[in-house]
Image (cartoon, rainbow, N blue to C red):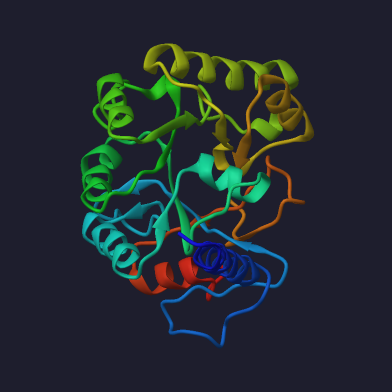
Length: 265
């Protein structure tokens, strides 16, 4: 390859990177259709989606997404060329030097309910997606409604990320330092020793935390903690222990709004 050809390749790559980086800091509401993401000036678009039960909806509970709707949501992400990324890649992209792909989305699941294993994981695998599952360690295998350790081991082999949701699911913002330390250290230790993984991320039970909680998280080496505060946008200046997520409902209209940035709550 001559010098001119090499220069054209390098120039083309740099232009592509610069164009993408520019998209992270400039609004694009007037570009594309209703399924395209909206970018905000000076912010990084990367919605972190939050699920609980993936099962037939019970009453008016907001914590259930039906399996059929979940399948439609995963198909929509795939068909509209959204890139489902890991929480590690999200962390490296927002707070590190890694370039995020276009249309990045993170899938997260709280509590370790068995219906996530039964109804969500197969759909995700079908589309080549992975997700982060925040586990209450004391509930693993505690009853038919919760995942077992064997299920979690299988999910690890399938590329799923298993992280901490504490031991007992307490309101961390309402308990003292010793209790915070127990809940955060014990859950981390049990998951790591049982599954042979490294636990780096936490989801606050009920979104509750305090300055003490964050102090303990830092001391224990957690990289991130996710909240229940809604936002699709992030900044390296935002605390790694206050990452917002979008609570997903059992319908497509709100899902599209949450993913694209057209709906806040």
